[in-house]
Length: 161
Ligand SMILES: Cc1cc2nc3c(=O)[nH]c(=O)nc-3n(C[C@H](O)[C@H](O)[C@H](O)COP(=O)(O)O)c2cc1C
Image (cartoon, rainbow, N blue to C red; front, side, top):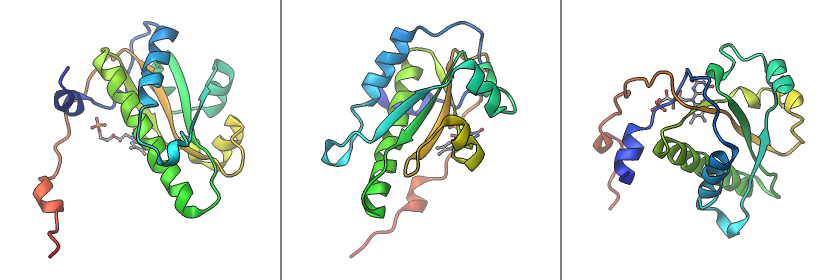
């Protein structure tokens, strides 16, 4: 798949088939994701695979669209707010890579931000200083939503002298 095609065709998936996703596939998408840019090669991402008990405690409104796999992406602590921001940026790049790798394989991902809420951090056992980048539902799409139009990029550009 051409990269621009993959970027434009990827959608947030809100409803999944019950078909399982193989652990090998998930691991290969995560491994690919780890080639994300990251300053000082500190690889700030860490992952939690969310099992059924924890998933039930999170009590998500659609149970992550019925995704067969749920995982959480964390960004590790840093010594300064500058480095912490860098870690979060790199971890977000990791997630985007994962989304694209899954998409190329015909799978899809639901990126939910509720893991960052204090009570959900507690359910997930997230240590102080870590940022929760997202809880990701992963599976094969039941439904692929239409693309949402983006603003013309020219309107986002300022040319400096
Ligand atoms: C940091 C982040 C947090 C998000 N959190 C949620 C969320 O909590 N619930 C949700 O439905 N979608 C969430 N999304 C997905 C966006 O809603 C989605 O990307 C947007 O609607 C554009 O749709 P598309 O991904 O299909 O292009 C999140 C996306 C990002 C980048």
